[in-house]
Image (cartoon, rainbow, N blue to C red):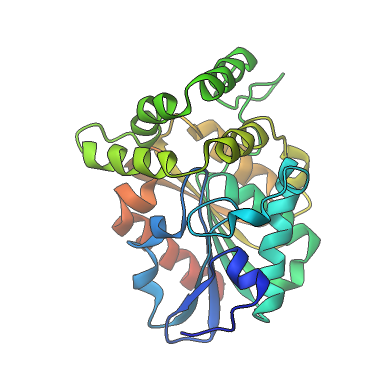
Length: 273
């Protein structure tokens, strides 16, 4: 579908597909772009208006619009998400968000809850660093080492970490795809986004979300362990929780059929309480 090439549409490389009128907006995770949804969104094209975009600084977005000041917190990305919704006059949006975009979506839903009908959060984490009474999966020292590795050798870090994040070692092509995606990102922007992501703490924001949500958790995920998914579910006021058989952090690539199944079940069940 052709849409006017406004500054916001160009900035975030927005694409619209599908035959329906109900908007379903897909938000990708760190080091990725909208192409990471290619196995998921076709299952919804018949019934929904599919809206795809790239975060500023990722994919084919307008990199010249990247601001280190604006994107020094996840709020900057949530502003972009809301601007896309406003630009396209999207109402009753079903937001499908992966990884760090889950908290970006949470922030957007708090700021403008009337825009959103439902949230589908895949591999969400409100805080990656362990804290007293909270297990995020990483010690502070782990994150310091990660940042140092990013700073000294981003391409080497990408080649080493992407397959670990993806999991599914028996399918090396998946890790290679994520590696290539990481490596295609501007290293300076990638390092900054990583710092913002891994040092963020959005635990307090969860309780402020009023929009019904589905938390989708992989059975083994090094980035967002099961305990994290359960924490998100417990602290969202109106949420459902589904544990996938899939492993790794990117079931949108490694287990699209299972991911689509739980998404469709949630959409049906939440429409018929």
